Length: 79
Image 1: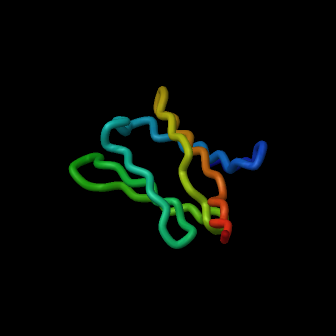
Image 2 (image 1 turned 90 degrees about the vertical axis):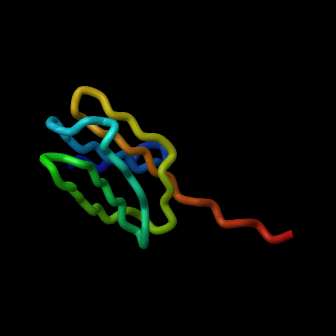
C-alpha cells in the first residue's frame, strides 16, 4: 500500500493482483477507507486510516493495481 499527497489530494495505491475489478468495493466510514472484494469463495477486506472528512473522487483498477483518489469535503457555507 502506497499513500501519497499531491495537489490537495490523497492518492492510495494498492496491489490486488488476483482480484477481479468487478468484485472490488471502496467505502469511507469513520475516517477509514474500507476496501473489500470477493475472492477465493469468501470476502477479503482491508481498512486504511484516511484524513478526516475525506471523500472518494476517483478510482481506477488496471493490471491488478487499485488507485483511489480522496479529497477533503468542504464545509457548507452558511448564508
